[in-house]
Image 1: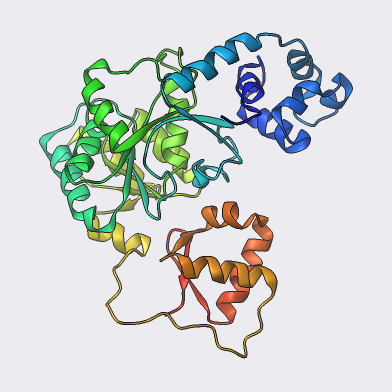
Image 2 (image 1 turned 180 degrees about the horizontal axis):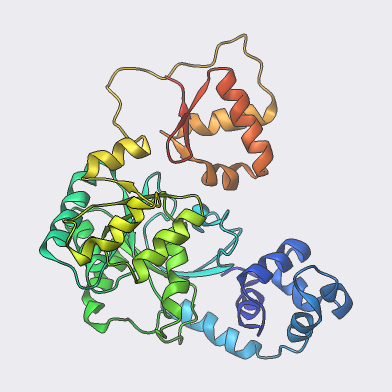
Length: 367
C-alpha cells in the first residue's frame, strides 16, 4: 500500500474539499500528509481553498474510518490508485476534475494503447443490441479495452460481448466495492474482475445513490480515447457522458437509427448538433481514430544519423520506438514533461519528419 494512503483517503473525505481542491492541495504541498500538517494560514492563502475549506481540513479527525478502508482494501486485494501511480488511468490526468484516488479490483492495464467507452440506454431495442455486439466483434482484432458503467442495457451488452470476444472490459461503478448494483450483474462483475476489472472513486460502504451516477460518468468519459453512443434517448446518463467527453476533448461517435425511433433520438441530436461523429460500424471508428492496420513489411525508418536531437526529443523518440503508438496523455505521464514542453517536442520531431500525428491525439514513428 502507498505510504501516504491513510492521508490520501482522508483527504477525499474532508467536507467541502472536492477532487479539484484536493488536486490544488496535493500540487502545492506534495503529499496528503503534508496537507494535513500544513498551518491554517498557509491553507487559507491558497487560491480556491479559502478559510472554510482550510478550517475543515484542520478540524478533520476521523482517520480511523480511513484505516478501516485500508483494511478492506488489503482483505479483498483491491488497489488504491493515486494520481502519481503509473497504473492510474493516464488519460484522466488532463481532466480538470479527475479523481485524486481510485479503487480498482482487476487485472487489466488501464492504460492500454486503445481504450473505448460504449454507452447507451437501459431500455435498448434489438437494433441497439445488434449494433453494440457487432461493433465489439469487429473491433476484436484491434485489442481494445472496453469501458462502460455496468448498468442494465447497452452497458451490460458491451461488457458481455467483450468477454465473449476475449477482450478485457472495465466497469466503472457509482458506489463502493463492498456492494454491486444492479445485484443482477453479480456474476458478470466476477467475470469482469478476472478478465478486466471494476473501478470506482467511492469508498467501500458508499451506496449507489442517484447523484453518484453522473459523477461516475466523467470517469467513463475521461479514461477512454473515444466514447461511442450506440442507442439513447435525448435524456439520460449516455448524453451526460457524451457531453463530458466533448468537454475533455475526447472523440465522440454515435450510431444513427430510424428518424422515428425515440431510442435513437439522443444519437440524432448529438450528430445533428456536431457533438458526435456519425458512424455505421467499426470501420468508421477505426478510420476516425487512425487505427487502420499497417501492411506488413514496411519497417520503421530509423532517425537519420545527421539529425541532431535534444534530450526531450530523444526521450520521446525512444518511447515511440518501444510502442506501436502512444496517446499524448500517456506521454505526459511517462515523460514527466509539461504540456507545453511535450507539444513543442512533438512539433519539432514532426518537422524533422521523424514522427507522425494520428487522429485521436495519438503519435507514432514515421514509416
